Image (cartoon, rainbow, N blue to C red; front, side):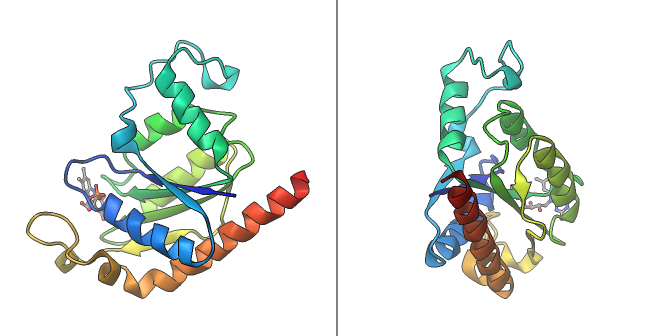
Length: 188
Ligand SMILES: Cc1cc2nc3c(=O)[nH]c(=O)nc-3n(C[C@H](O)[C@H](O)[C@H](O)COP(=O)(O)O)c2cc1C
């Protein structure tokens, strides 16, 4: 069983990859197999499929590859920043490419921002619930202090920046593992 960790930020200078790295470390330490997928590397164009995702009929290799990545995962953990009171457009684009691949899968949201990214979190709950992810009811909202950033715009020490909430991430990892295990057992 494997949990997909999605880096929701695609900016050339960002902290999303650093945060996902810490999340990945903690989840692995809690016994969760993980795969990190970086939306920047995935580089999906703005949705260019002629048919709705619910049909499952995909015209492009980039869609089929993305569908296979999500299909192969037993759970999905989305790591998202808050941009202007919401979550990034690239993340919505990546969600909209697929439909059935999300359905019924255990999921969790980890948002971050100056004050936890709660607005991005809440909006993403609506969208990911709509496509059928079975979301962890708590998730994690990480508050990043301004002085955690270095002059180059990245976190000076990502582990230290979110150390106060590492226990929350560990607890989330335990719940995601339990949800994956339960679903796996139910499917026989
Ligand atoms: C376009 C944009 C909008 C932002 N809006 C918010 C915001 O609404 N609330 C907040 O706390 N931080 C906001 N920030 C600050 C981000 O939380 C911070 O830059 C964070 O590092 C972004 O994640 P990233 O570096 O992984 O892209 C914004 C940053 C950007 C680039």
